Image 1: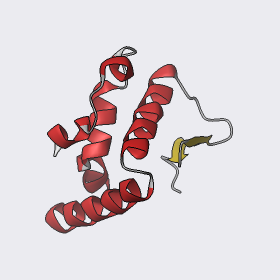
Image 2: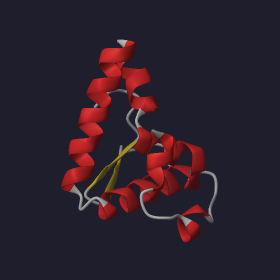
Image 3: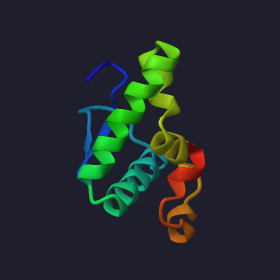
Amino acid sequence: MGKDFIAINLFGLIVVRKGAFFPDSSLNHEMIHSAQQREMLFVFFYIWYVLEWLIRLLCCFSAKKAYFGISFEREAYANENNEEYLKRRKLFSWLKYM
């Protein structure tokens, strides 16, 4: 995990780098990932995540751009500041970020 790593969500468990600033928006971002993981039965989330990252990497030749292009990340970043988002989020909402 690189220096940009603040937190990672592993099967619904949020791991935060020691000493990292972790604002409410970051918690909301990770909770959106938890919802995505549950609806994809966890293992399919990770399979899709890696495949989508690889495809985007092949298209743009940038790991960072590939990461920010992943539909799961796009949904989470787009809604991390909306505290009400998870209350009204529909299943598979990440699909509209493809």
